[in-house]
Amino acid sequence: MTAFTTPGRPNLADYLLFIRQGLGIGPAYLPDDSMWIQATFDMSLGMVNLGLAALTMPGVTGSTIYTLACYNFGADRLLNFALDMPGQSYFKDMRASLGLNAFSAGLVNASSDQGTSQSLEIIEAAKRMTITDLQMMRTPYGRAYLDFAQSWGSTPWGLT
Image 1 (spheres, rainbow, N blue to C red):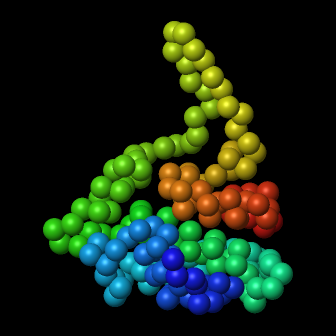
Image 2: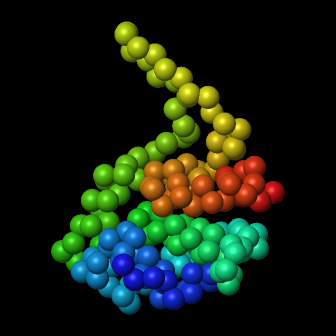
């Protein structure tokens, strides 16, 4: 596995490496010059809380936390929005397997049948989730992003 060239600062080359090695999406499904790579990278830079960039780790220039938050945010958006290459169905199949096209108005609070019943307490942050937050809960990359964001603040978007 190849290491990021600049782990403390989000950049397009390392984001592409994250897509190739972290998500396992090869160029046959998403060419290096795909507009979706740049678009989702730009979305992440525009939407990930810059407050995460202030968080540093010893011995690392910049914020690896912010960088990983950006790459995970971008990966989630990539899985939600990217169109397939002609003759391919990678993204369509991925969206189907993750249930990304199914509507969800919230998180399950309780379920039961004739023999069993269970209930999970909904945390306060989940009560304030936006539709985007709920959609991000469907992919491992969206959940990883929300983990970073919420670890540093009381809302899903992070610092408050």
